[in-house]
View 1 (cartoon, helix red, strand yellow):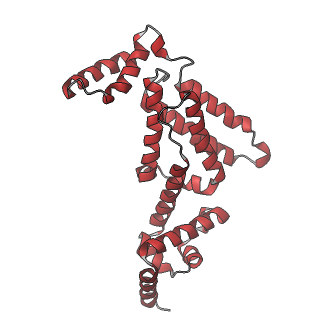
View 2 (view 1 turned 90 degrees about the vertical axis):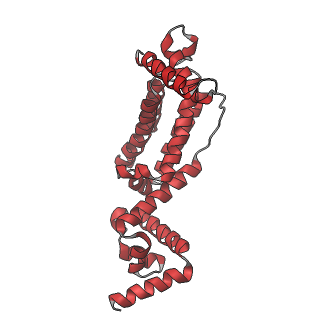
View 3 (view 1 turned 120 degrees about the horizontal axis):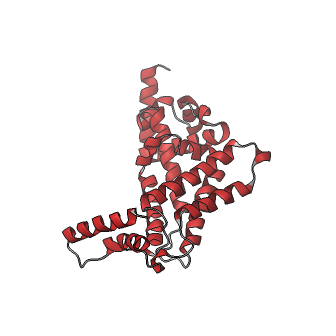
Amino acid sequence: MSTRAQSGSSASEVATIGRAQARQLVIEAAIGLLTRGGREAVTTRAVAEAAGLQPPAIYRLFGDKDGLLDAVAEHGFAAFLATKHVDPDPLDPIEDLRAGWDVAVEFGLANPALYTLMYSEPTRSASASFKAGMEILMGRIRRLAVGGWLRVDEELAAQVIHATARGAVLTWLSLPEHGRDPALLTTLRETMVTAVTNRQPVVQDPGPVGAARALRAALPEQTTLSRAEQHLLREWLERLAADG
């Protein structure tokens, strides 16, 4: 079949089943190949064949192979997001932090090839589902800060939590099966908890650092101060919190 004929055929295929359904078929086919054979197995021809489409359909739907891989990664971030449980008022915020970290690691271990693809390109942090997941994490961190549990700045806490979870998964996957000790995951998780939280809420301490961090975290929720007053108070609180 000529290239022009294949292109016309692919357009007809996409039109017949609908663009959204065709994209989903291709993404599922790509994930299947990725899971069974790794990233090298995800070629446009192999994906098209697995999805029951002509290769030009891939280009019509995703632009190129990189566009397809980005769509697969986005699907992975959406699936990961669906596993997250949000408790707006956990009884124990430290245990809530541990549980969230465990969920992230368990997803990676259950979907090794997909997880590796998701985090192989820094630009994928622009993913809508990735951003939504980070908002959930920042909400969990904000609750720690409001309660005076947070030991470090909120942004740094997010980076430490995210980096240790991702590092735990990728390190585990790099090890031979006989060398995978579950104590590695527990140790990394507890190291993370120790690094970003206090044993007791610091707001119970008379020092200004913990109180400043707790008040700074709660500041967006108040409506008494004007925007200019909030800005000035935040500047003072950030200077106090930095002394810790």
